[in-house]
Image (cartoon, rainbow, N blue to C red):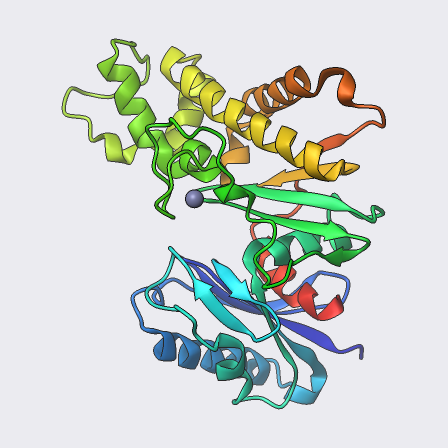
Length: 319
Ligand SMILES: [Zn+2]
C-alpha cells in the first residue's frame, strides 16, 4: 500500500487529525472541539494522542505514514517550525510547535500556516489543478491567503508571506483588525465585522426585513443570518454584503497588480453567501482592473469541502 499522509488541522474552534491518501481522499479522521482553552503543551499532548489514536484505531503503524503535516491558524517561522503569533488560540508566541510534536514520533513533521496549506491543497487537488501559479484567499471569521508560484508555496524569508488579510485597504476605516491596525482587508471584510456593520446600518435608519425583534442582540449577526437576508432581498443584508465584497474586490485587484496570476481561488465560510456576494466581488475587481487585463484571469470558488484544512495540512508532505 502507498504510504498515507497524516494531517493536523489546528483551528480556533476545531482540531482535526486525519489520515489522507496521497490523492487527497480522506482515509479516516478524528475531530474535537474542546482544545482551544488549553495551553500550548496540553494542545501538543492532545495532538500527539489523537495521532496515535487514529493510527492504532486503523491497525496501522508509524511506518505506514509518509509524515505529519500541521496547519496552524497564525504566523509561522517555517524553517524553524516555530509559531510566531495567532489570534485564534491562547499563547503560541514563538513556540516550537513542530519539534514538540516531532519528539513523540520518528517520521517527518511539517508545520505551516493553515492558509498556505489550503493553497497547496487547491494546487494539488482543487480548483488550481494544472496551474503553475495561483493565489488562494480564504474568507471566513478571518481572512487568510497563500501563494503558489512555480508549483511551490511562496513563503518569503520568514514564512509569513501571503498574509493579504493584513494588507491595508482603508486606513480611515472605523474597523480595527485583530492585529491592532486600522483598515486591514481582514478588519474591513471578514465575518467578524458583520455585527458592527449591521448595527451601524440600523442606527443610520436602514430598515431590515429580517425578522429581528427590538431586543435583538447584534453580536448574533453572522454569515448565516446575512445569507437569510439575501434570500429575502433584505436591503440591509444586501448593503452589507456589497460593502464587504467591494473590499475583497479591492484586495484581489491589489493581488492582481502584484502577481498577475492566472487564477485567484476564493474559499472560506463567507463564500456561502452565494452568487450575489461573488458577483459583487468580481464586479469591483473588473471595475478597477479595466483594460489593464491582457491575459484572462480566472476568479473562481474553491472546490474544497469542509476538510480542506486537514487535507491541505497532509498535502504539505507532498510539496
Ligand atoms: Zn490586520
